[in-house]
Image 1 (spheres, rainbow, N blue to C red):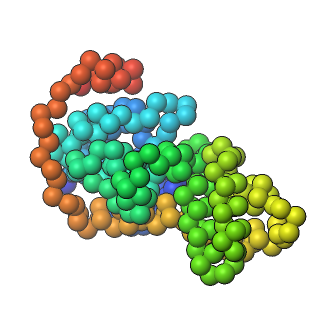
Image 2: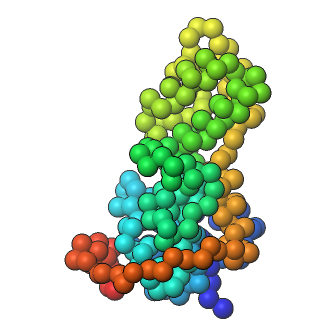
Image 3: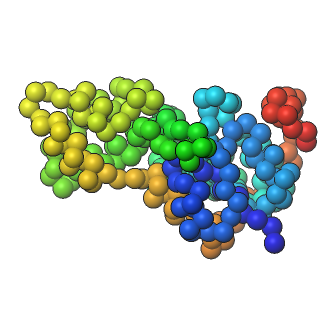
Length: 240
């Protein structure tokens, strides 16, 4: 039986993913990851959750289209997967609220899903918080009366103003401090009600992968292997 592949890391650990679906779990996708994985595993389906973009070039749109042109279902959710699915609609299937947000708002910031994380040796442990998770947390807290609309706006502004490499709930609360809030208590209250939207979307996508509940794929036009794509794959040490 052809395997299913899942590219994941900081959003959802490999162990957590395997609790939902039988699959081959791979590190966050970067340039060449899709082509390399298809050549190695001949998968029936691919789910992209996380992707890298700092130390290595990000996963290329063209290699996803290349996999789709070979009849492989490619699904994206939660993080880099949601971004690429929104950008490659209607050919790549997207899952979850974050994917729908990127589909609706074409110029939404890429760094809304970005986090700083550790290496594979520490299971890609997440070191910062994604802006999208912080925003969802603040909106939920405002609806429950934990914070006021004015506090919500101030906290969101503070979260947006800081680089994703330093964006944490504690940093957001400290930066938004106006002398009135109890910083320590507010951190505790927001932490206790933290909304892990990226993780929720990833889990839903894994369930879809397990159930093979794929949308009917749009017919792919004949894929043109451009010189730029060939160079990208050469740079990644791959031959098509």
